[in-house]
Image 1: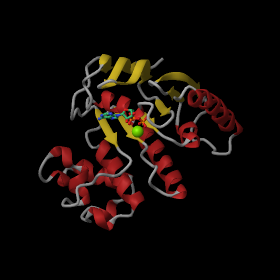
Image 2: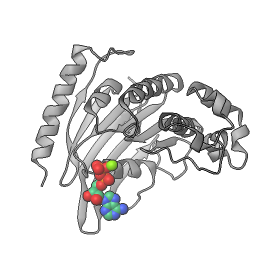
Image 3: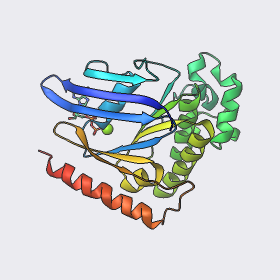
Image 4: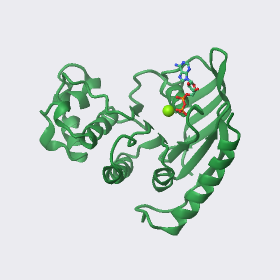
Length: 247
Ligand code: ADP
Ligand code: MG
């Protein structure tokens, strides 16, 4: 039995009069890969921001390794839908950004760029990278502090289907290599099922957990595995219920 890395108990999150999250509890074990799916606006990004320490105004308690989330904590990395690389810094300096000025010279930057297949682009500018390459650089940056937990908010939504599959496999190999726990928001049910140990379905109005689907398959997985298809159906059934609650 592995230990619990993240404990989430959000009693309530509001933006003024608008209640976004209502009594949501979720524990994540060290090394686990968990996806969060749910209708648009159900509070997925807000929940991720709470876990990252970017949102602090809520009722409830979130603990990472027993401590409250802190902004810029080395324990937590965040990857967004867009790479958000700084255009005036080299690829290497973007990856080593957390180390401060000249962070690109840090030995781990070279290792991470090699791991994401960008060793030849160390000194390149972000605008010289394709969308998929830029997102690989963002993954390397997210891993720079060697976080125990990586939060990803629809990280592959902006790339084409083929690049997306390659990025999914890269993410899995990286998570396995570094022992990183992943909490990932996605719109793509196939992606959620393929990547995850557990898919958590949220419903909206306000956001709660509708249910979760365990995907008990070893990795590497075959995308055509019928067991993935069955998990997909279970997720879709939960999502259908979640959509019906939407108002
Ligand atoms: P999701 O990521 O599931 O699509 P979000 O967490 O982004 O949903 O948003 C949940 C709800 O909270 C939406 O109705 C959104 O409009 C609202 N919301 C998100 N951020 C803010 C904010 N900073 N101020 C006001 N309302 C917000
Ligand atoms: Mg969102």
